[in-house]
Image (cartoon, rainbow, N blue to C red; front, side, top):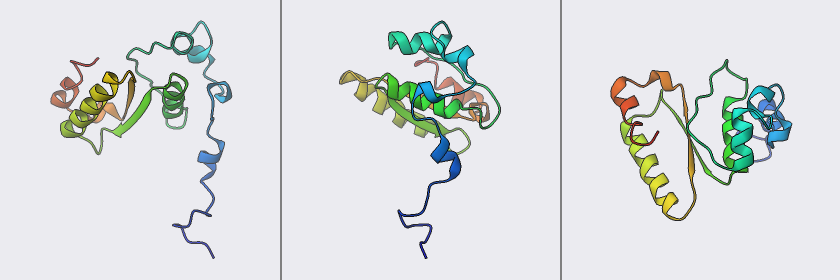
Length: 127
């Protein structure tokens, strides 16, 4: 009988069904079509700061991850519940170093509203 730590254990259903390409994302045409905000970013390959808002399970993380993959950017996910200013500084420094080699970074902050004002201010130089 396989244990939870065996690589032969099947992935959760949500992970198996998660879209692997932008074309597989359903129900987000208002964001991803050619004339929509993220669609234009995909076409040009130029990503600016943006906020994805919606209920759990609507595809926010998946869309951000796929946008990073499609534009060949590094994807750095963090949770505001478990992260602080020190974590942000590490990510910002890694992103700065990566930028020197010509590669950009998408920082995905889940639950950003959980950051206090001081933590949120840490983003100002980068947004």
